[in-house]
Image 1 (cartoon, helix red, strand yellow):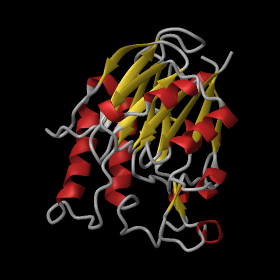
Image 2 (tube, one colour):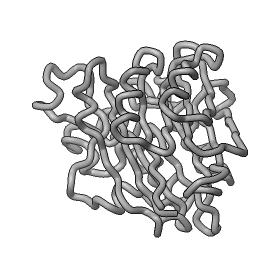
Image 3 (cartoon, helix red, strand yellow):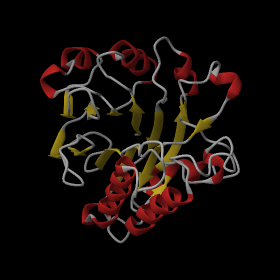
Length: 270
């Protein structure tokens, strides 16, 4: 039996709930993790989510900004929402699957701060916030999975493309937030300190290009193809042998009223 976990920065769940339904109908994930839902908990379109077949929902919302959610066809327990950097931003939610093929699997869903435009923490508070967020991720014991036997997944929009071929041109983007040497190093340090396995790159090594995001600013995103891999799937070493397939649903970027991110679907046999 397999477990399909999808992650997607939806850029407003209420605005794009029909797009979510289209994706779910076509690909039938067992678990769907969303970021940037931009919706308070009391306004979340739960009826629509349940019509898609997800009876179990965990949300962490915020008016107009941020927001993360987990939809599941299986029971959820041990739901946790962590605040980072002394802020009340809704950027993290964690759940454990109570039953089904992934029973016992712990899932962390993250939306790391984008960091603004200027990659200098001394003059850009948003960039300083991003670096501080990464510091707290690295120091958090719950994300140190390397030496244990726990089966854990970390997914989400981490807003950093860490490798050379995670962007269309590493040389041209070296001073652009999301691919600066400092961010790339810091995300790699977070992953290494936790003992995480980058599932996407384990199955599709460099130098193959991998993108999950294409800017709205491009007149023709597909022709320009100036993408970045900002969305990630990490596995604990105990779960890594279960990895089977990762699919980046590029065509979703061309759907009506698209997000600038596309879904990433990870298939496991836990």
